[in-house]
Length: 323
Image (cartoon, rainbow, N blue to C red; front, side, top):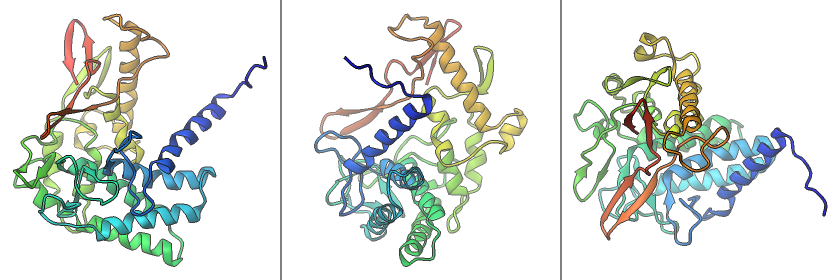
């Protein structure tokens, strides 16, 4: 038996990254550019996944996994679909007021699962759209169209309507009952949402950002002072599009930190918890740590909700801090 070749860390990471990118190639509808939320049969598209796909195409071009022409073609199909899709208050539309429903049928592109008009998932989609606009800068007709469509899609989002007269932004809206009761309060992945909202060239809502940071929770865990959020993805997600190093808002200036440094500290905290493993979970340790995912729970035909798995708790100093 021949031993498999030993890969360097860089070679291993490159292979893993290429395999991860392959998801966007194999779970894609070439007719509308939508990407499935999961690889399970019948899975709808998640607009957040589409945002990640649009962000990954330029990376794939730079890494040699995809030609620029193929990336342009996929990006144009996607942006044309969202530009031309149904925008109305009807329950089977694709979106409303420039926002989009969390889950869309892979074929028709219409709302599915009675999902919400999602602010955060629209923001992740927009982040991908704006990434495409920033990358495809050639003067060709196709790349020029990408930039035109991206600008129009961003300008169409009515953040002032979404604020609904409140201090902070809500999590979503449903045509059956209006805005959801819960808002984006407390530090979370929504930092990219708030930045897009206050930077809007058409419907900016600058006051909501300061209101949001007023709901932050500063903590000390395992000797690290940091802006608290439990799941690690909260500390990483917005960094996929924004380089926060050295950028400080009022809150971070007062704490002599920034969001990049805060995420670094959060990573140390996650690892320390796994090392201590106070509840003796199997396999937690030096090379197995980082608690970072949500799961979707379907409760009956009409009741949908997000649930946190039991691992979304940090047990520190004998007390439970819920994520």
